[in-house]
Length: 222
Image 1 (cartoon, one colour):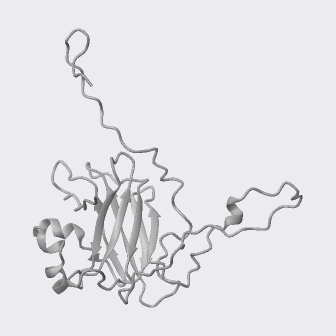
Image 2 (cartoon, one colour; image 1 turned 45 degrees about the horizontal axis):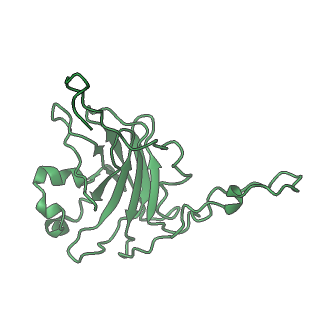
Image 3 (cartoon, helix red, strand yellow; image 1 turned 180 degrees about the vertical axis):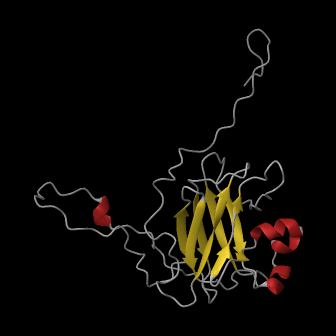
């Protein structure tokens, strides 16, 4: 497009366009943060805060988690967000009596490790998932981690990052990603202990102007 108008004057730059609409209100699913089987003795909670560039909590972000199991398996539970097809299909015209209650989800039964979770942030920008610590998977020198995808209003693209656990110091030294980052940047990918069976991992979408919050490292995917 020309950058001047009919009289030769300069035109203002077109504002950046974000993807959307963002259906953050519709994508969360019941028990989306329940990755570990219910009552599993080794389950841990990973929780935190999503903040924008001003350090303000983001109340309607959506985070998706993928991970290997404690044995390094990537099998997970395919279809763990699968909905009851009867809920999607229109009612037969001859149906005269109300339908029986239908389960919203078929594949998330609380008994199987799903390997996948999807949770929204609350009004305070907080999220939480209940899961099992992963084992290393993929590359032989990779450290155990959770893969995270962040969706939020105003983003041009969804963002990918990782959560590493503090117990694997030796593995962090050889991890292909962590090993090439400066210490202050690698630190943004480390969860920190927050009580028995709890880890805190905050997502900073953009570095704050005063430098109080370091931007989380996000990954480029082609």
